[in-house]
Amino acid sequence: MFSYDGMRQHVLADDEFEILQQIVLESAGIVLAESSRRSLLDYISLRMYQLHSGCFRDYSERLRQDSTELLRLINAATQSYATFCHDKQHFRFITATLLPELASNPRQELRFWSVGCATGEEAYSLAMVAHEVLPGAEEWEISITATDHDAEALARAKKGIYPLSQVRHLPARHLLRWFRSLRIGNDEYVQIAPQLQQSVSFRQLSLLSDWEHPEPQDAIFCRETLIYFDMPKRAWLIDRMADSLVPGGYLFVGESDRVEAYSDRFEAVGGAIFRRLE
Ligand SMILES: C[S@@+](CC[C@H](N)C(=O)[O-])C[C@H]1O[C@@H](n2cnc3c(N)ncnc32)[C@H](O)[C@@H]1O
Image (cartoon, rainbow, N blue to C red; front, side, top):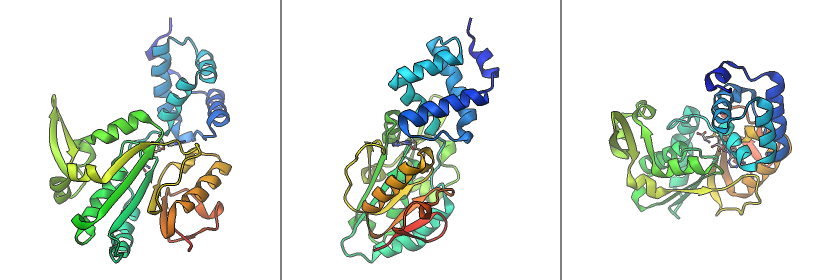
């Protein structure tokens, strides 16, 4: 009889992980990073228990035949714990350079796109700094579009409720202005203030689909998301994101994303930030 505890002591063997990598790459063009192996083991253990799968082979066969099951696995592999104002270098650049540059723009409209927004922390952080830094922000149309293919993550993002522990590192003035405290049972949570929620719209979008370009964006944030794609899809996506930016607009990526290796349409600004050439 299959036991969940027994499976948890099992280690995802090299050949099993390779089978998963192959299935996900062939069917979705997504590269499963070695760093996702540990968290995948927990997810797969639980899933095999729920499905009464007797062994890894049964489970991998199911993945090949059942696209919903495959999507669940991809979501589990590409989800990671996010925090507010996570990338310090990025947020320093946004407050010191990007927002002051935009502030001189008479149209008083700001458009940011958080690509692969997961549970929304990045999108709300962007709304927070835009409202804080732009002079006369209440007069501005601040529009943060946040997209992901994971419907469950988006539903959580829309609610805007997070454990208190996730925001403790923020300055008190941010906490007081942008979050409401909430108690659920014995646990403490915070909920995003309505003014911030109004600036952020969440939408389901698969980056591998033939998505329509949004209105030209002042900046696109694509941290820790390109890593899930193989090289041709990365090049394709970076090119499409260039088309979705205003000339001179900024692309923010993860530390290891080498945009210059895939496109000559950007100049590096430093700190995983790239500026679209005119
Ligand atoms: C590690 S999270 C990045 C979170 C966020 N960008 C940040 O830095 O806080 C990666 C996100 O990419 C999303 N993702 C992966 N593949 C995708 C695809 N093909 N289309 C849309 N979203 C995808 C995942 O659902 C996940 O939420």
